[in-house]
Amino acid sequence: MTMLDDRTTAATWPAAYPQGYAVVDVETTGLARDDRIVSAAVYRLDAQGGVEDHWYTLVNPERDPGPVWIHGLTSDVLEGAPLFPQIAEEFSARLDGRVLVAHNAMFDWQMIAREYARAERTAPVRQRLCTIALSKELALPLPNHKLESLAAHFGVVQQRAHNALDDARVLAEAFRPSLHAAAERGVRLPLLECRPLTEWASSPARPMIGRQSSYGAGGWRPSRKRPACPYPNPGRYASDKPLKQGMRIAFSGDTSVDRELLEDRTVEAGLHVAGSISRLTSLLVTNDPDAGTSKTVKAKAFGTPIVDEAAYAHLLRDVAPADG
Image (cartoon, rainbow, N blue to C red; front, side):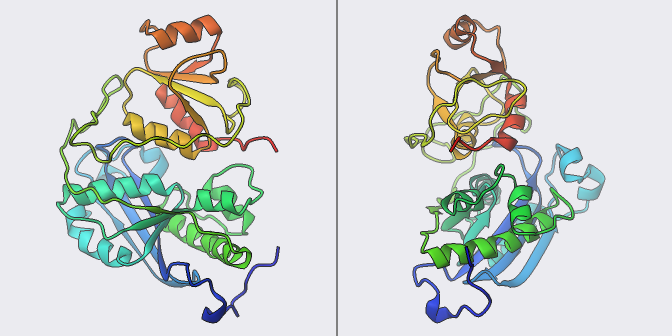
């Protein structure tokens, strides 16, 4: 495949494509509804993916920083950082009028929208583009959907994985050739609507295993019917192998991460969310395998593998592509 090069002009660029992008990465205290942003970076790109400028900030989460071993930001480092309301205006200036681009964009958007809602503001974002979805549209021959694999495919060198500024740089450099490849082939960009969160009701700051944030009239987004999984079921999960796209994943009991967020991440990884247990179920995720619920009883009867939420979150990081 020959990609469009720097000589591509506005006259040959698809008119339906957006006129600007904000490539974003945020590092957070965790994945749950009440987790907070600890750092954020934005690379502003023009219509053809050229870098205009970049911006980075630490953010004081007003709580424990969470997985320091991942993002490297300790309480001491974050103590003197600005609070989110103090950087919200500058963040907005970087996002305004642009498509938010991120690797697993649903997660970054949800974390950003919640921070704005806490600050009693609205994020100026109307559309997002997930580079995982774009790589699928382009059928890139990636071994998995990690950022490092996308970067390696385009020859982009990562310097500090899980550093928001470097991750945003890497993604911006990988997004540009992806965008050009899509333009050359006439691929419709996988743009999704962003619905800003306008109200916020805090729940306990550190949700524990066995406690699930509630959804309902005050929820942060409406429930919706999920699309059918496009991949065939490859069978059961094996403990010595990764999850594979198409596997049927069931959940039982309360989770520390919002259930709908956990299910969204499951769907985005190419897995099927199963509402019940059958002999075709690939894996049951539960924090209490001895609870005696109908799902755990059936899973044990059928020999369905069972893992807890923490183990499942780790497995979601590296889901193998579907066969052929």
